[in-house]
Image (cartoon, rainbow, N blue to C red; front, side, top):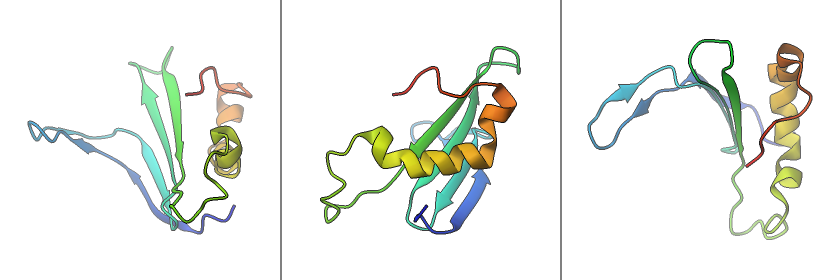
Length: 102
C-alpha cells in the first residue's frame, strides 16, 4: 500500500529511561521503509481473556498538507488492511472489527 518494503521486523523490548530495566517480549513490530509501523501486543496474563492490541502508525510530514486533518481511520485504512491481511487476526480471533478504537 505505498509504504515500501518492511525495513525491520522484530520482537521488541522496552528499556525504562529512569531505572534502566528492560522488558523484553513486548510485541511484534513491523517497520516499513517510509517509517510507518504496525505493532501487535498481547496484554493480560495467559491466553484466555487476553487482549490483542494492534497499533498502526504512519508518518506524515509538514509537506504532506493533503493528509493533514484527514480522519485517522481513513488515512490509516491502507496500512490497517495490510496489518489485518498479513496477521489473519479476524481468522484467528473470529472478530471482524475491533472492540475499541482510540
